[in-house]
Length: 311
Image 1 (tube, rainbow, N blue to C red):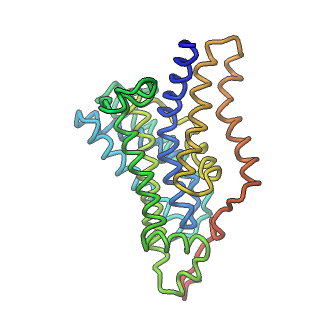
Image 2 (image 1 turned 135 degrees about the vertical axis):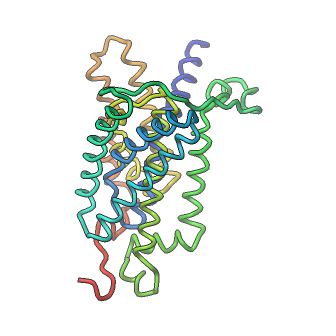
Image 3 (image 1 turned 90 degrees about the vertical axis):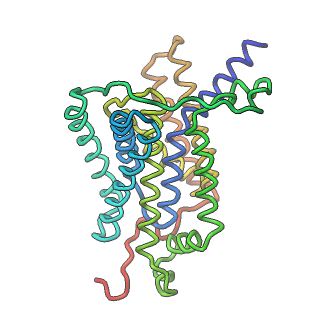
């Protein structure tokens, strides 16, 4: 019985840890899509966050300053995506794919220039684990949440913050109206473009935080293309979560469970290629079942808005 409990608690703890980067990106994607902008560039933004988090930590010897640099890089990625989709009316999906390709190539070039390496950087400063005083005294629960990364606390704050922003502020109400009918929002005097810019930039910051967790919060270094599809999984989580921040967090836990289970099955007799497919199989299954859910995407998602007088 004790062995079973140990395995279960280890699996749950691993699921929470693995879900952190996906949850950050999914929260950002929720915010962006609620304002009508599809952000297919989550993958590239996470990669940029992972790389510049390491660069910041490398030069400042501080993981917190590295996280700040990663957030700045994410804001720039978000701004680029916003300019392409809002200002120049590029197709949202194509703009996101372009950011992904840019991030994949740029991080490799900068990795060679800064660290003189092609595959991975050197180890840098990382976050120390935080002991939660009360929880650390509770049996079983202490094995799951007794010691956590500060990034998990930031994730909880971000989830509450995005929920509050979307559902308890005038700005959030305007963003949701824009996602449903930007023309009606514009006719009421709402600055559609400014609201969308803010949402997409915030999306970039959150996604970059998820990427930074993977590098300076987990393995303490950057590895080429280390995001490995988590940005695309985050997009599936946005759909699975019903375009709601709490749903996005719960959905990320499901994928975290699949990823954590994958790590544990690799030591068994199951072919490793089949085991490595598990998170992506879960993604496909979730997308299939999400089509029949009662939740629907924002009506104006992916549609270009033209202000009065624009062609």
